[in-house]
Image 1 (cartoon, rainbow, N blue to C red):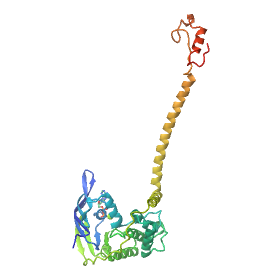
Image 2: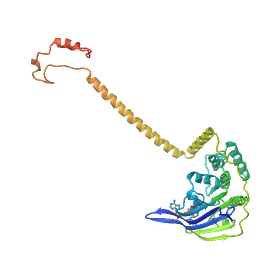
Image 3: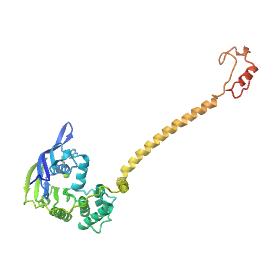
Length: 349
Ligand code: ADP
Ligand code: MG
């Protein structure tokens, strides 16, 4: 056999805490082959979600090696990592993480938009997936109008829209009643039977019992790794048509705009606060400029009022010269002489 799908060696994850560090994962070694159904089990706070985030390339280990398809994840560039998160992995969360402003169909379409799948193709695929998950009559419903189990099925459809090979489910039944939880598990089993690798995090032994392999984790270490039977033959996946990277630029722009508006509507308070910041910024710049311009005009007006262009000539040496009354050299003829100067507009003696 070649290299497994996933190979972790000596993975650690540390968070800074106070002066020291908090070691959440300690020296994790784990191999997962294509087509396995693995349950990661452990108490709350044992590091399960941290491990899942590293597996899904949502987080990076502090040290250790993570080979995916035989290639080191740490050496891939950000674009490759984004493509992995978008196309290789499908994420399912305990709290669904659906966009409340969008319909079920819209939510399922989102990853395909980022992948650049043409509108018609992704709509058809999203509809088909929701149909297969028993939500064919709920396409136009928003998450708030769906039950928890239905919302989780929408999020499973979203995880599948880009034909993910690996499904990562973090406590997918944690917020569900036991019947909806059973439905979700049955769907995951079906996906596994189709040949997808399914990794599910749970603290519920009944849920873990459905998996063919249980990895137990306690305090950041793997303490047990049991298999209930041999891994099934990896089946072939029904591949999606490759995304047309050459979707028309204008179409992509319109799509980006649509996503931007949706994101703003989904985060109303944040958008309002951002706008408020911009408004305050622009208002203060405008008022400072207006204040400056206004006072400049005012000063100019005052100076003009004093008469910068009017000269008054008195006899004597300076203003208030006591002897000026006795000076008689300034005569009416001087006025006429001044009036003859080219730069003098008028003279009044
Ligand atoms: P589980 O999913 O098994 O309940 P987690 O992987 O979420 O546990 O968390 C494991 C431990 O790591 C917890 O003690 C948690 O407080 C800590 N932890 C998780 N994320 C962070 C973080 N971003 N910063 C600091 N500590 C964290
Ligand atoms: Mg968790």
